Amino acid sequence: MWAGPQLSALDPELSGQYFQQVMDKLDADGIVLAALELENEINMAGNNPDFSLPGEGKVLGLNDLYHDPEGQQVAKGYLQYLKELAALKQARDHSKLNRQTPLLPTSLVDIVQEGPWPTPKKYDGVSVGATLAFFRANGLDKLVDAYNLHTYPWADGPGNQVSATHRLRRLQGLVTPVCSPVGLPDGKPCWVTEWGFTNANKVCPSDEHSRSALVQEMMGDFGQLTQEKRLVALIYYSWIGDPPFDVYRCGRLTESGRAAIGPISTR
Image (tube, rainbow, N blue to C red; front, top):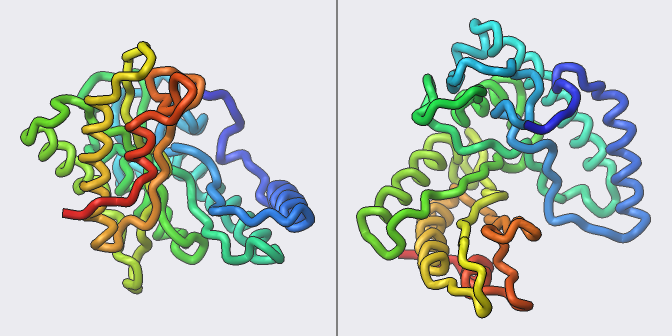
């Protein structure tokens, strides 16, 4: 669990001053960003101190954000977060160089099923669907250019068609309900700003056979969703310094890393 202030206690006016200073510095240094993202995975207790700890071991839904005591506290933080996001948008909109830089909301952990966790946990979360529904009901779509998801797919059965089908269905179950195709008047498309697989092998050169197969498979799955214009950007998260996730090994980019930054395949 990461320590930090409650979202519900944040000061949008003070944050806005800081955001403006950052944008001014970027302008002065001639830096154009690929995107702006505010906050990380706040739909889970690990990154949001408005959740109670220990929790009840459940995933909250939209109704809980209005009626459950813990959910109401989380919702209070969500509303304050949207004010912070509005302050960042204002600073971005006044930038000389980054006025068109895509603005993303907080990333969301890929929690879909509501109710008790499938595997018991001592903390709580809010589903992606409930979080985005609450955000959108309170003005999110006027602030951002896309929604923002994190997903770390299951790694069982590399090369096995049944396992591959399960991964695809899980990805579709995450993306399709919340990510709208580009150009529709209702909703936004999505960025996936974290995804990846581990590889526990430590030898040099790195044995990437299984992980590379998984990465290539997922690139095909992502390709289907990019064809539908529901996904518009992917960032493979390498976790440099965390050996199981690292795709830069033995002094070079691994086969898995090359596959992750290669062209998205379609089926």
